[in-house]
Image 1 (cartoon, one colour):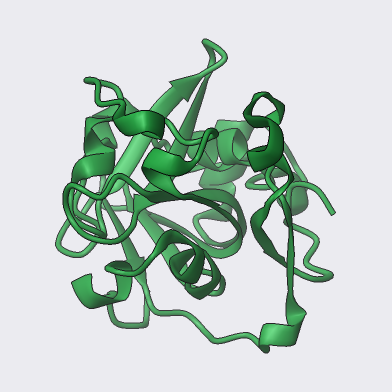
Image 2 (image 1 turned 30 degrees about the horizontal axis):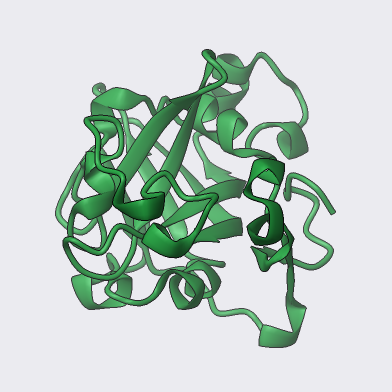
Length: 200
């Protein structure tokens, strides 16, 4: 895998800025046997922390489940949802500021055969087109919660390519209707025309 790892400074930004900046970067998962699975990030969602009714840290909530949200920028926050799926987030800003960016979709790059085996799918566009799908394809689960994405080996982020800002579409987040007015805010970002995004 080419490309330098992203630095701590890259992640120490507010979640909206980071959500946009992560588009085009490369998420890398190294399995126990040394095989690498990777994908280009093509869809993200920003979660703004204590004031954001859709965030797990809303109102300053702090539990064993969301403890990783309070780590320094550049750590992984992995949680279980609907009793069946894992979701992977990148913690933003600095420690004790519980904000994060949900990675919603990847464009598969390396280890596609292994992703197909794990997902039991034949078409590349179905492998990582959603947060639960990409977690299954890349074998991301609770064991990776709190992983340092700057220094870690099992999971890290490398520099990809920049996209024309005019190609980035912003819209409401998915599946957070309970957050009322917060559900309508344009905090989801994806690359226009990319076939791997979860919803167009």
